[in-house]
Image (cartoon, rainbow, N blue to C red; front, side, top):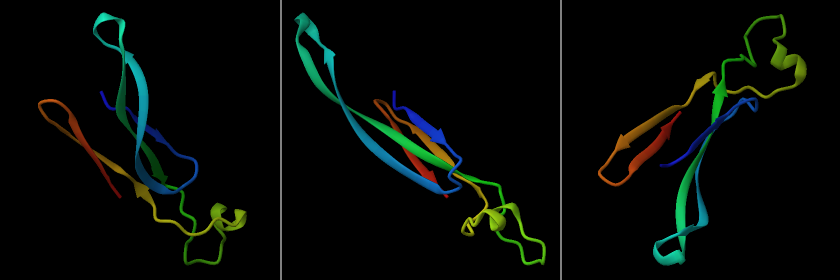
Length: 89
């Protein structure tokens, strides 16, 4: 199983796969070094940080830079032994 961690609050859109190594028990109490891929997704925002009008938005008042509004799309494609994961803006 490949974990996917999704979080927000930064108002950015970003995705990165991260390799994590761990020791697992194999047969006869021997330990085996394994690699598990994790995915970190910063999900985006729906807070508009810029509007072409005279009233300032919350983001403008707080000094946030303009960012695109929307979310990330997480794609999963199951295979025989693994799941292919990719993320799109």
